[in-house]
Image (cartoon, rainbow, N blue to C red):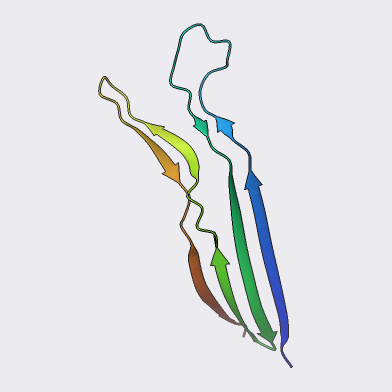
Length: 96
């Protein structure tokens, strides 16, 4: 007889400022990374020596800024590191 399971992960992240303290003596580029939310879901069945599961990560397809990537030099470019987009899949496991 198979048994089922399910998990839901709800993660919420607050805004975060990158850079020096607010009391610094000169202006620098101190961007704020905005808040974001992630929803992950996994549902599966387990039976004797096998397991099958369907999963979805980042179900609301949130495009979050996770960090800042700055190049060095006079013509330095600034870019953001982002999270993985919505991902869905199936996992199949055998135990022997």
